[in-house]
Length: 245
Image 1 (cartoon, helix red, strand yellow):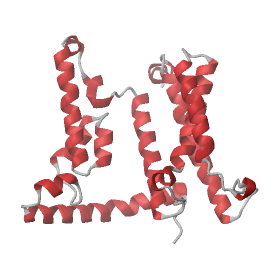
Image 2: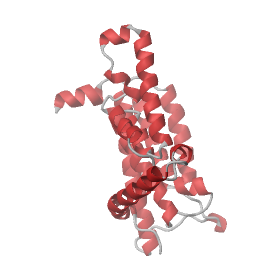
Image 3: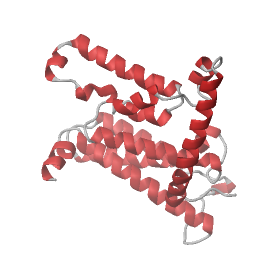
């Protein structure tokens, strides 16, 4: 355990990332707890409405993200300033992404079905930053050997191939597999070789004259969503609260 900590956390450049990720996750969980209490009318917390205008927490989130981001860029080593900037950045990003759906729709959809998009983005962001903390590099660069690193063409070809596979998975409508596959190429490869989702650009382009492929795509998407969406919604409701009916 100590070796893993020294290798992945204490090593130069990893501690600020660890602090930012921890602050990000804690901020999201604490914010959701407070908003759920406000929604239920419990506890001392209330919406901030100076002059009758509701100030959403995305506003202080943007401010903290700006301060922390510039602080991280200007920081160095393991100094206190670098760590503090990383924490401020993590807190700011947690506040901003908790209202990602609000920013996306330009409407207060926090407790609606559209508000689930915020939870999905937070979970995906935490997973990707966690992979970076463990040493994964986008598009499989971390899997290149020392001999291959000496050959720039091999490295470039490896990056381009992994990027192309992730892009195919994305065009096929497999967003989660494509994003995670940017760090672990196996995931994007699975998304690239499987049938595209029926509403994806790939299906609209290549399944137009293939009715059997369109039908299989719809059936597979229906079965997948039926199997996993309910589980995902239960997890989201447990962590972030259920949308209003």
